[in-house]
Image 1 (cartoon, rainbow, N blue to C red):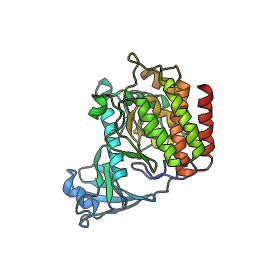
Image 2 (cartoon, one colour):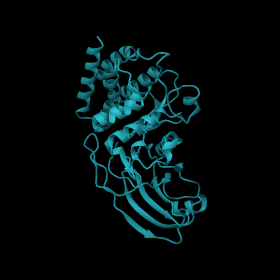
Image 3 (cartoon, rainbow, N blue to C red):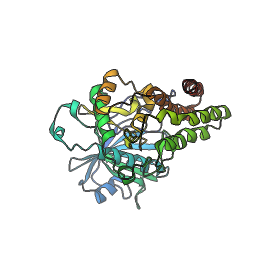
Image 4 (cartoon, helix red, strand yellow):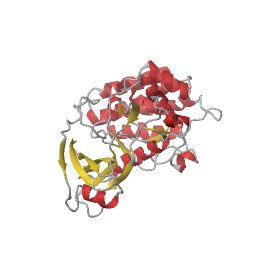
Length: 351
């Protein structure tokens, strides 16, 4: 999604949904023995236990943030994003990465396996996220995390298994883990669009109100709102296959899973730039129309996290609708037509 970037390693621009391109990032490195007071490198040396910062490499930036890699004398490499904007986006990104990282900690016999087909997802560890620390003059907000060298997408079956394992992991947030609630610890963004995540006891209520109706309000389009409300009124019937014997449990979701946010680290599956929250695992595939998932991916995923077949296609379209509405709000253009087509299809199938 526009406005965010990967966690290390320069790359050529990648086409985003809506015809937007990722900014080309230039790599500019310089060695430094003493860092200016108030710089991020100076703060890292003082506050994080990674030794001196021996090298700082600029990785370019986006319209709203600058990226850099810090090498330390301990051998740890850090990826840093700074921005003149407020702390909300980095705070949301940091909380999302931490929640996914916790879900992907390997706790079984696969932890010593070098076979990528049995590996969990690689998620960078976050060391700081939010308002720029007091005394630091590099922007108004920042995020500091492990630097990962991302490679191209790897084996789709391995990614499907790893994603399913992440979805099945016990949630980090007690609201989700102990109370079965849906939402997240902070509101965040999907692309540049605010994404409300206040906790809710019921998944269908959460999704219709915090996702579909939220996007419809942002669109301020009477025709879309009328169609969308009819879809929302019909939607609960598509969740009737779920009951006490087959409940929807809160899974940690990446939330914006398209091809530009998927890669590998040392051959193991990895994802980045999340719009994280706890929700129905099927909602993760709402961006599948530009994710390039293969049959091998879906087969491996559902071997690990079994599929509820009844009304699956209706739910699949409903989960896509959120992201099409979001793209209409972000980019305009032909996305309105696609939103209308999805809603009319849902209404015809639900009649």
